[in-house]
Length: 111
Length: 113
Image 1 (tube, rainbow over the protein chains, first blue to last red):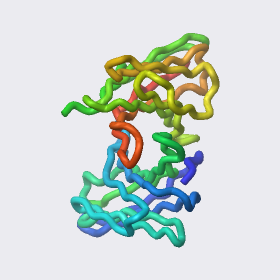
Image 2: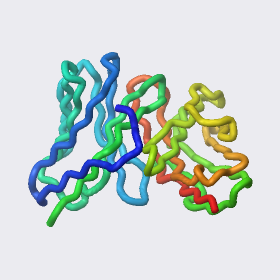
Image 3: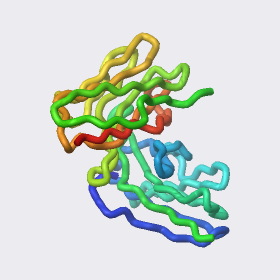
Image 4: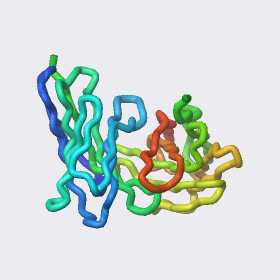
């Protein structure tokens, strides 16, 4: 996904519910994807990654799904907590370690 | 293990000045990349250094430069500052290339008056 200047989409969820954040990518040759979480005043924090030879990867309370047919990634957060409130970015290497970031999605958790 | 450390955290400069930002990567990481983050353009790649060599460069003017030292620490320099250079500058480190996630510092917030 190309990072473009913008109004970020916002996802509001109730505490305890599951969250699903989506990301589309354009390069069908992309073979590695990373999700980052960025809280206010901090740098992006690595959450989970996935290689294109996998469709699904699970971490602690997070799952990333990769659909190569439609070039789509999703990040699922189980039992969303107030501490999950942040901006979430998907990223892919364009060349070497040059990461291209998606625009980001704001996740707001309501208590 | 300590994370990526960036100094200073905040910086205020005026147009025409130059600035140097510093980044200490995670111990053992040899690749350091720099990114600029603005509300309008999002996260944009500046350049990457590996073993003291610039390995990749983004689409930024020559006023933006960097270097890496033998201990993998890196600095980036911006000369002849412009108002549009106001941004959060982020440094990220990784072990190398391949399927390795980059880990970011908390950035330097640069404001140009």
